[in-house]
Picture 1: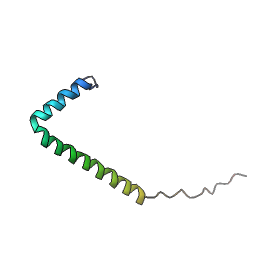
Picture 2: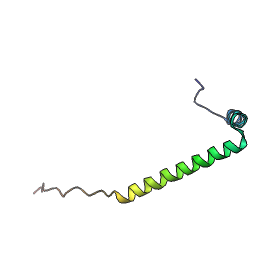
Picture 3: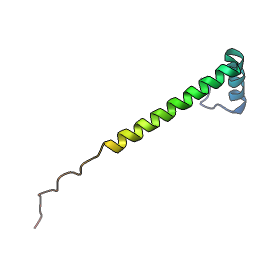
Length: 65
């Protein structure tokens, strides 16, 4: 529909419309909340990865002579 490209002019229009709808104070709060959510997601993923360990497969007993 949009050709898969979103350039700088399009982003500026989106930001301007968001400022008109939400206002600068609410937009700042939304950005802070989004940043906190991303930070919490990354920390929980890192915590999950550090607690999950993979065990190597058992050695193969096929010995070729």
